[in-house]
Length: 119
Image (cartoon, rainbow, N blue to C red):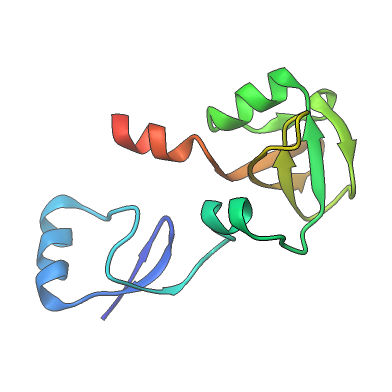
């Protein structure tokens, strides 16, 4: 059977279904089938064909805390629409976002692992 989690779509067995029914939907479970967005690992390890934006220190801090990026935090951008890889001033990849009107919506960032640990 299939389950949709925050990380994407996964194939699970009956035992996993029972655990999920008891404890709630996890971030990821089972055998990966389909992902909503490129994973943080893909963003960090591969050269993806996605335009980049560079953000200032405040934009970097807000983004890795799970917040969206305001236009005034963007130093340089390769596009004004669609999905983008968010980088800091040193060129480190912080995650992926998507332009929505006057902000870049946070879709996934490197801080997600720390936030998941604390919850």
